[in-house]
Image (cartoon, rainbow, N blue to C red; front, side):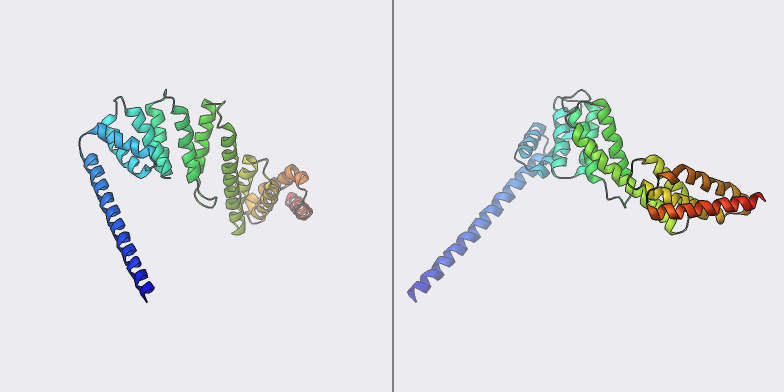
Length: 280
């Protein structure tokens, strides 16, 4: 019983110590926050700059963002402007706010084109768009912008150490665009919008001549062209059927899939027979 009582007393003391510790920590945090708020709301910009840099170096990037943002207008055109702009972008990047970071890195390049950080800022502005680039099924505007920005970077810094990784990112994003374009074309085919499918598959073949899906695209392009021809107004049937024959003669030999080859040969024969009837 005595031992049990001692344990209860010990637990009680420990609980009280734990509560005191939490209270002390809470008070410390509150005092710290009040201290930072006072500096942030004050007019001592050198003190703000010190807090911003200290916070960044300690890995407190959220607080660093808050202070650097507050400093940007004040230091514009002053001696610390470059540092503030650079570390503001870096802190945003560290907090994974890539959209804002990309914008700030791009702004940095415009404001400080001769800075020692300009090359890295240009790379990171493109990299932020790459990270934000969505899955292929969504709008690919950001992907196209990232590709354009990386290409601009490589033109300006052809010997950059980032070149190998950029080439990897470009391959990845182009594959995404390629998949998107193919899915759009196939979607038109599935809903029997043959004119749109024909044009889309043709664009796909021209844009991605090395694609593994090129053979599929050629097959569906010719099929779409044929369906378009036989369902056209009488005045357009001959012209569009001739185009089917021309497409087969252009692409037929490149198709190796036996099923595709057989189907395309059948389409070609039907097209030739149709043209023969029209000519009579």
